[in-house]
Amino acid sequence: MSHHAGNDWRELNLTTGKSLTISCCHRKYIYTTSFCPREDSGRNSAVQAYLHNIESDVWEEDEKACVEATKDMLNSVTNRTLWAAWIWNSMHYPTGVFYGSRFQMGNYDQCLNPPWLKSHPNLATQYCVVEVHIAGNPRKMLKDYGPYDNVSSYLQTASKSGRHFNKMLLSLCVSKKCQHKTVEKLSRHWLQGTLFSHPKSRDDKLEYCTDNSVMRWGEDQGDPVKRLPAGAR
Image (cartoon, rainbow, N blue to C red; front, side, top):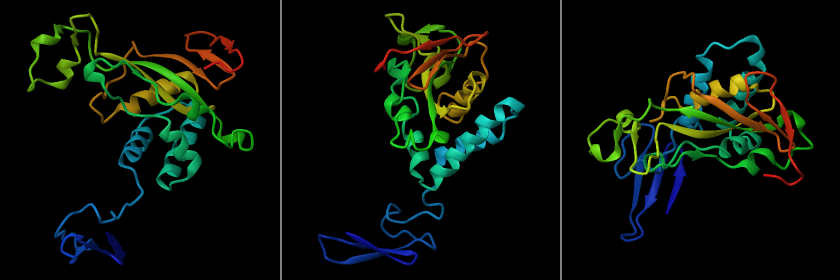
């Protein structure tokens, strides 16, 4: 049990009945740091890293509307604004990759169906899937690796069944203002700084984007449109 007063947190030990003061302003943690609010409380480090990566890139004129919308979303996440947190929470960083999980799909319905979809069309989003290559082509079988080998080398393995670890399908929930080429770049920034950070690859490919009524396939020319049947997911 704990309560907060000023810059200090006082923790009550339920066994001894004695309290313990943890001074946050001087960073003298007698017991634990988990009760101390950080000076940047509410600012998610992953959000800040993604924002920094986007701001550090050079964008073409026709990409700027998407970039500004993305930056606005990220800044609003740090302020815990619901519409932005809704988008952010519909995505996730890759999990299970070392065990062969290739599909990192996030939450399709949360991305496309916020409660304010009709009342605030300016906040409309699209669900996009990009095939990203996070390592070179497989070189060895999985059995050839040990616990102290390098992650990048491991990602260039193939399992006995032929499953490769060097690429994944990654979903992003982005503004409807975003073009396909911009989404591909955003996918690289999303992974930058993670175990799966990768340079620009000619093999990266946007598979499709959809806003729940129209699906746009990522192709070099024309971006043909397919209409989804009612209720399709």
